[in-house]
Image 1: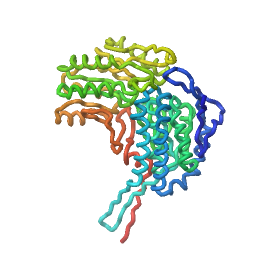
Image 2: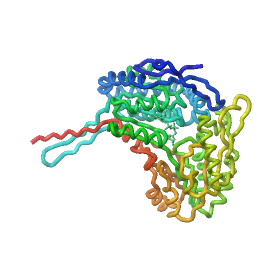
Image 3: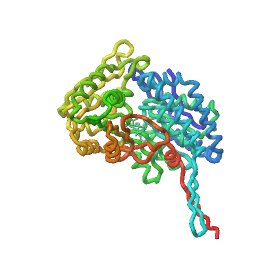
Image 4: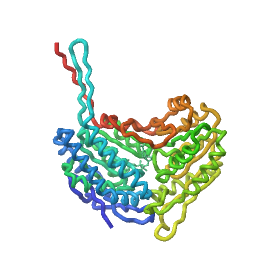
Length: 481
Ligand code: NAD
């Protein structure tokens, strides 16, 4: 059984406590590795290392920083298949999905920000009375990056890449539920020659290792992706310390389908936007609103396709739906199916744990679930479930669907299906979400601002937004007359 180690000051080290936590393989429900149970002592050593590394790293020319980050990306590419298998084993996602999305995207994140930093420029403002202002965008110092379990290496690199490219030193924590690929990454950082202390990866629980990062007075900015409740608790700790905060939180995304849509493309995409990664993507559309004239037609076509989507062994190349990430999360999802039934929902398909055979018999699998007959304001339609569970609801007017779509505390992403150009633009303006997809889903350009409104977060990631977040703007005014 492989013990995961922390990566501090350029070395792989044991946690100070000497304690470890079990790491489970969702497909089998069995423990397959051990994770450091780190605490504030480990974080302190990491912060000291990062502070020591900062003066040199922050003045290393951007081009040189970029070269090292590109090297890390190329090493992941070299080891692609190892990363693909590890991500699938650790998270329960189908190996094909890890190969198509997760690991290529982790490589792209590193390459994108490595090259992006060489195009990052600051503003200048000249004044008529013989003065000029220019803005310096300097790295902040030591920053904290904390990521969740659903897209492990993908979201971990999405944070550390801009932080490092901008010249910061980082103390990062991947989710304790899916730590393996971040550990593998730490070995590649050593191989790539990333100077000691520039990136430190601490493994452990949110309440101890994570909280120690949030509380540390020398960590000046926090980039966090995870649940809305955790985000609120992080903000409560960090805000009075005046830390810069970027919070990417939960969602309850509407998928709004008008009768004039391209029906076949919409149904095909809606299966994906509902159930990709077992519905464990913050951008999945979990509330499906369908214009009444095509409601029954949609229901029949959608449920027919979903019924054919059976969970399978994540390591099987043919599997489209893998295992749920943890027992606790599986129980949470199933508890929402019970709530839906109590609220009067009719289960059109799924709604149950799937019992597998052989090695997989103790694994965590849920049949993709479609529910109808619920009111838009019930708990099932207001609270984030984050699993393979969607509801479908008919609507009659644009005004009505906008009101229902905007009724939750969340505002992350929305998908809108219509061929009516004017309506598409109106809806994009009226739906309260940070990310709107029209006639597509998860079509990503890494240059665009990424993030949510309301309870889905504060700030935006992506492109120059991320590089601005990881730098401090300083205005310099020069009078020359
Ligand atoms: P989580 O909030 O439980 O944990 C996320 C990370 O925060 C983990 O690394 C965890 O250890 C750490 N953490 C927990 N408590 C902490 C604390 N007090 N201080 C510091 N760190 C702490 O979330 P999760 O269950 O891992 O992920 C699922 C959630 O993430 C869902 O709500 C999902 O919508 C959200 N998510 C959002 C986005 C986005 O871009 N908006 C992307 C992916 C996932």
